[in-house]
Length: 188
View 1 (cartoon, rainbow, N blue to C red):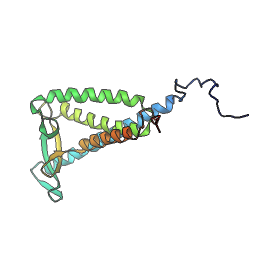
View 2 (view 1 turned 90 degrees about the horizontal axis):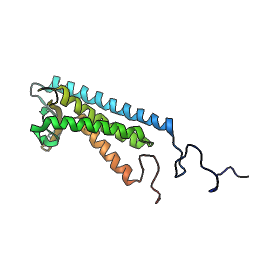
View 3 (view 1 turned 90 degrees about the vertical axis):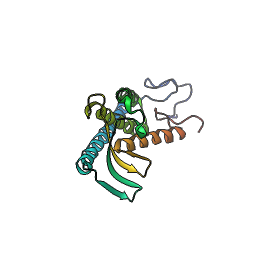
View 4 (view 1 turned 180 degrees about the vertical axis):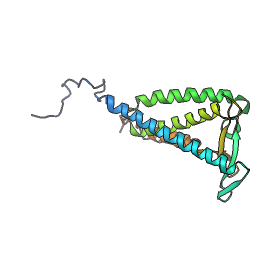
């Protein structure tokens, strides 16, 4: 007698209509992993900004790889590439809504890769939200501290790196057919 279920066997009580088990508590643990990744991003970003303001606040520029990568302090009131500088309060709202959406989605993932990607995105959104809410010139209008110069292209920060890495992970996971539920696409 075989221990393998046959198609006529009833599905386990914790299985969804596709016959895949719902990992409930173990899936929720992935949310906490996403949160840990987000907290690490926030701490690394805010600590590096503290360093940048302390070391570069007097206008100092530190070349890292010649002019290709350098540390130089700027305060960015806008979005990427300083776009929309007069709409800083809108970026605060978007960052807040983005953080809520990312946390909601992270609560539901069943894939380690997706949990890490969402943690990176959530951490970046939260730290940018914090800058918008609590930095000068005032609540909801704060400027983001940027200090990593990439040639003459743009100047960013650790949160930007986390957001980029999270977005690349989402793209790679999607192209690999890994769903947020942890299942691979059926055409494998």
